[in-house]
Every structure is written in structure tokens, then in C-alpha cells.
Length: 294
Figure: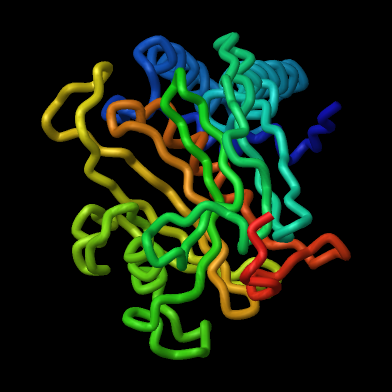
């Protein structure tokens, strides 16, 4: 229940509901509604400076009507956003001590994701390499083949070509992205050639719970497929990287460029949820038993 004090009954509190003919923020339907409401508010402003009890009641009714009908458009509440809710599931990898969430359902669209865990969490020494030098390795991965989505977590040492300092506080987000991408290729090519496959669109850093995270967005050129035969076909990625004990832990989420408008915001939520966890007894650091592959 919302309790309104008498001071809230003055119409200037409704300045956020003013009608702006040039505004493009509202739909035509809502714009017409806002115009009608503006007309009512204008009438209310013309009331005498000493309102009668009837005027006060009229203002109260108008205010309650405006809050219940228009506030969802201007300041959405949880009820207004119900249609945009996304059901997420969480994964905790105790072997490598990290967690993240991923979308499983869009209730308002009755849409279910079809995730398959293609690689279960495993220790770094036994994980699949992403390049011939086996520096960067995938420690877990899940895919949605139907919707062409991939979420993977990889671990690898920093590339000193880009991250020369051992003080991670001095690392630039673009350099961290280049370090990870330089080792992310199955081709027997140089680091510079691997980087030419990718194009970084954005990179920035953020500190969460005292831990530094680097976020970046990039495109990777891919070969045409039966479902997408355009000559300029790309996979659109978002990723997050954190450093622990001399290794970079990275989560990347991607889809085809044509699907980015639909799937991109959901993948961004997944990347934002990624963070390292305090190690438990099940934690296996990447440098432990490098010879072990099981």
C-alpha cells in the first residue's frame, strides 16, 4: 500500500508525466494517453491557490489514477516488467571455483532454451586446448545448437606480448582481450594472425568485491553455414575475464551476428553474472599436476 502525504497532492509532483509532443519515447497509444492526461493536469493547475475540499479530492483521484496508469510507462514497476522476466539457472564449478547464470526460459514468449552440456567442468590439465600450444583450454561449455548459442569457460596464462606487467591493476581491458584472443584459435598460426580473425568492439574494466574483471565485446569471422550463407558471417561475442594465481579465467557467450538483437541482451546477463568463488577443498589450481589428463 502506498501512503500519500498532503504535500504529494500538489500537481508539480507529476512533472515526469508532462506531455511532450516532440518526444519519441512513448508509443502513439501512450502518447495520446499522455496528451489527455496533460490536458487534465493543465486544468488542475488552473485551480484557485486555496483549493476547496472538493478540489483536493479531485486532485487526489487524478494523482492516484496517474500513478496507477502512467507510472508503468515512465517508471516501470516489477509488475510492468513481468513480461520481460527471464528465468535463469546457475552453475557452480567447484573444481575451478567460479559461477555464472544462464537463461533457460522466456516465460512471456513461452520460449525454452535447449542447452546441452557439451563439456562438463574439468581440471585445467585435462581440459581441451583452444590452440596448438595448449595454453588456453576450455574447462566447461554448454551449447544450444537449435538457437546457435555457446557459453564456454576457458583458463590460460596471460600472453606477455600484451600483458607485460605482473601487476594486474595496470592492465588495460583491451590488452586483456587481446591476450585471450591471441591464444584462441585452432589454427597453427601466429598470435597476430589469430587476432586478425577477431575484431574487438568494446572493452572496459570493473571491480567487483575487490576483484578486477575485464569485459569485452568482439566479432569473429566464420565460414558460411547452411542456415546462414551470407559472405559476411560473424559470431558476436561478449566475454568477462578475471585473474587468479597467474592464470586468466574467461567466460565467453556468443551467437550468430544475425541473432544478436534477440539474444545479445541475455548473453550479456550471463557474462555479467560470472565471478570467481573462494576455493574449496575441491578446487584444483591450473598449475597442479600439469601432466595429469584425467
